[in-house]
Length: 82
Image (cartoon, rainbow, N blue to C red; front, side, top):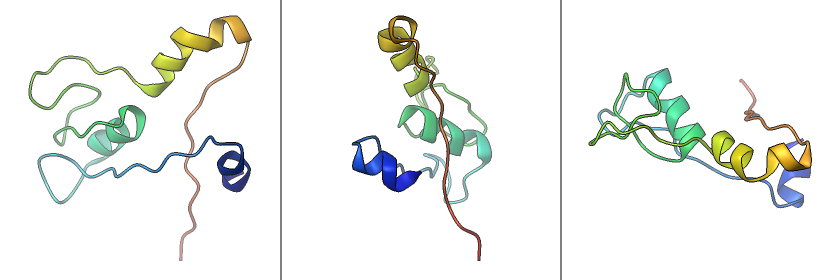
């Protein structure tokens, strides 16, 4: 699936470390993944300094395309465990 998306131009790489620690919690990692912005550990979809809400990539594309095109949106991860 990842190769297909990359071939079609739908692949993005994101660093998910937090802005407050070298050890990232799930809230900060998920926010980085969904918004492309770093936040402090324990924060979900809010700016690290101003506390203003951040727009996720899903919200952005839903506003722009989903309603008219009838397409669905989602985020997924593809990795292997060793």
